[in-house]
Image (cartoon, rainbow, N blue to C red):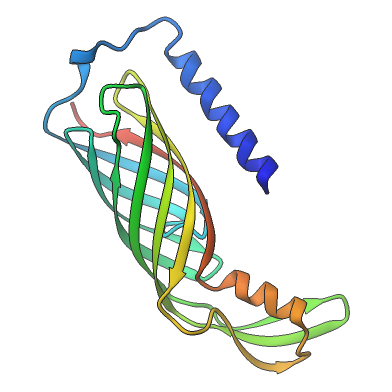
Length: 193
């Protein structure tokens, strides 16, 4: 998993550096006022998982977003807030917080080798805190890579119903529930001027 994260960060770094190879971003090119962006997300344990978001950036420093997606714990929807301390730079660190809800999956049969168990993946509400980096492109689009931790407000990630009470199968069921390590990649496209 760490290898994939490092490769993703390297690919983003190269893409951002090549996009700025023949341009220099002036300090006065920072847009003023609110900017709306449409985002495409791909993540593990991220509130929008494989989904979309609408983000409104205020003076390029604070961003409010809302989105929907599909993940291992079912359909997801949430709202979030991100802050970018280095407003005038093509690169900026990012810190974010999100509240989200999932639909759950109902009953799921999990099989490992010859063992099988039935679990319920309940609907859940959660909170995510993450950190990462933003790469802003000349046209106002930007790319985010982030990782963090989500916490479920529910007592159980998964509920054992019947079958083999194997700890390995329980671990797989818990991975499908809400809570734990989070990683995501987001590409945000500037809408309008």
